[in-house]
Image 1: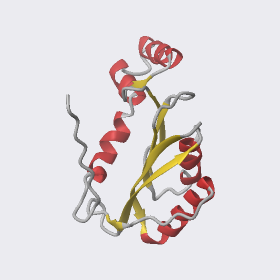
Image 2 (image 1 turned 120 degrees about the horizontal axis):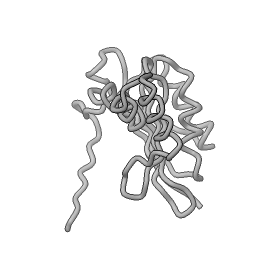
Image 3 (image 1 turned 180 degrees about the vertical axis):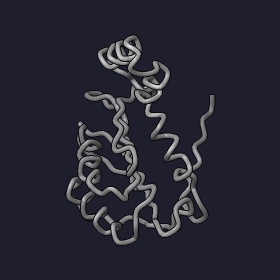
Image 4 (image 1 turned 60 degrees about the vertical axis):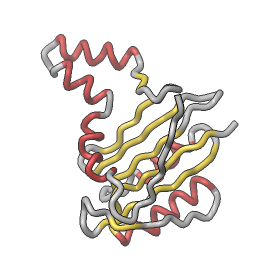
Length: 164
């Protein structure tokens, strides 16, 4: 069984770009050459997108291979398939890595035990429930990555059309 996904390298220093390609190639077992373009949100950095196909769990392997580089901002997604839910990994130098399970309609699925733990911490006054829920949904990562997601001049743009 295979799934597919996308690696979004939102910002990488130029010197790190070949290392990203080698890491992705090591996970996928094929030569990888990314089309790097300048990242206008962070001068001096580069961005790239790469569509991949592999076994369920490939997204986590890609995220693990890239997580050690602290100057890297990236996201890895995997679509759900018949044997696994979808996944999303987001990483920033300041926040580290975020993982979410993604349902077949694109919603983040939060496990019951994580919700109960958030409610317990909020009930004890250790944190605010809204802040905990925002963290469980990945809002801090989305807030930090949003300026980098914008497709700058020269970025590949895919137009998706849906007929209802």
